[in-house]
Length: 184
Image 1 (cartoon, helix red, strand yellow):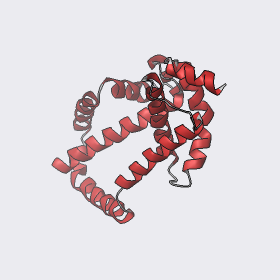
Image 2 (cartoon, one colour):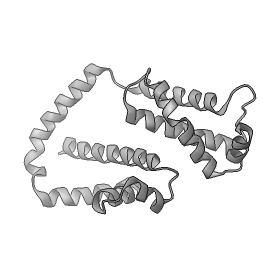
Image 3 (cartoon, one colour):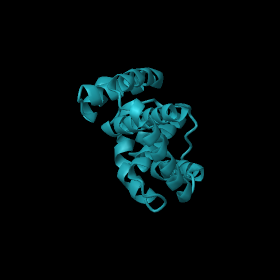
Image 4 (cartoon, one colour):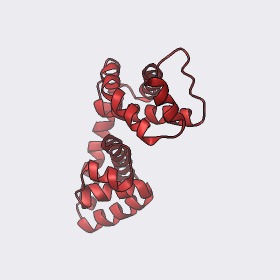
């Protein structure tokens, strides 16, 4: 089965990508929990690792002479996780950032309490995020679509891929709001 699955990946078969994604997602998250406890981050890393595996397969660069798809995928995911963890600030910096953010919130509260300012800023910020992010957020928050519905509407491989993408879009949106508060 493994050789057939590899050949399907190399031919760009998205159904094969979905099979790999589903087959190894939970085992990868269990494995990676020993390095980091944030399950959402682990799902994001796994998604990125799966996409990297698929791209390597399509490019003809997937060489699995001495390892399985699972071993190769876990190796990519572990490397991505370690790279991400190296970039994380130490815990004391996170606490300090939270205190600074709370102070900024208090300072800008009166401005942002005005609904028309919030709406105008939200529209402008959504437009800056890009079409896919904007569309996912609109479908989820404005149209109350489920992850499964968004997956089907936007042709994603799995609802978890949508969830991960939505999470990154929300993070970007929050960063824009934080930036707005800092510059005011």
